[in-house]
Length: 368
Image (cartoon, rainbow, N blue to C red; front, side, top):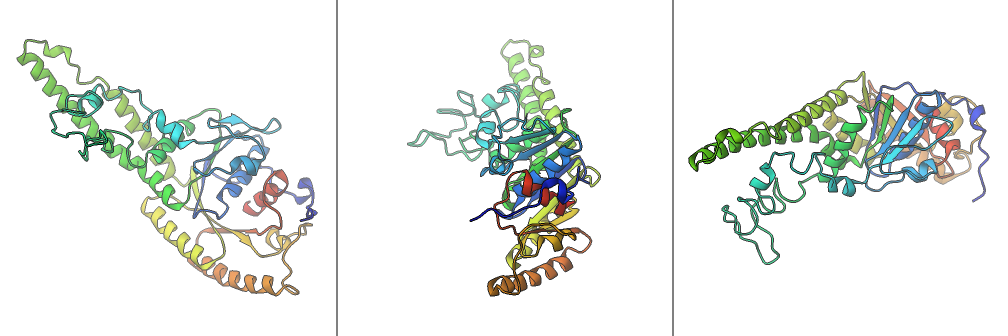
């Protein structure tokens, strides 16, 4: 395919910054263009000198390709001319560090006590009576390898992403954080984690306190000094984590600080999926200020409401283009009606793959 003649970035009159809160999350079904939108927003945000971090939590990363530069697993500056930082979270590596981001014995010994390797209530021959099977695993749903306190917990990759986001929201290096989330199902699990983890931390605290008291009594019964058992050991770490989770939850629910932007394409199934996502986000009290309709078969000049030298579809001479545009118009009309009260933005379908500053600037102008 020959190169499309795209007007120079400066002449497209793209925004020098973005009108957005401190935290912008792009979510939606897989393959609708969330990475493109996040990269465009991050780049535009950094142009006015706003230190901006773009984070991808999608296991199938494409942020590096979109920004045309290597993106590390930890935040690092990726542009010299503007303060743009980026990171592609590696869920497996982050899980290896501990999904809750705590030290190995942050439970004050409770992990070993309740089923860790060699713990009195877990492992081979523990008093729980959970004998190992042929593979060497226990079948205990709580203390076994796949139980609550053994092995990796359900949603560990989302927990790892949440742990890193807990760090990023309070990082003084960044004035704005833009998040390219995983596809819809994963995103909802990630958003559910603060409450789930908060509840889990509360239960662990209760268990820790109960077992600390029990150990104190046992120590006294067998001649030890009950005062040597400190019930507060490790609990402060958990309380601090609980406070940080609540802090993140309050940020996600504050429309003055956060805008979760739903990205869709102009097709009936995508409209239905987006409507469902919008309802679920509403249940979580997550504010949605913007709905982005991507890959619209409309002339870019019409979308931007000014002349730009970018190739668009020919609805007059191309029957396929005309028929697809009619289908899209029906979906657009339904989206406009369903998402009334939200800022609905259109991004055209480009003849080229969207990557690099040239077309990302055009996308940013559509989102502004």
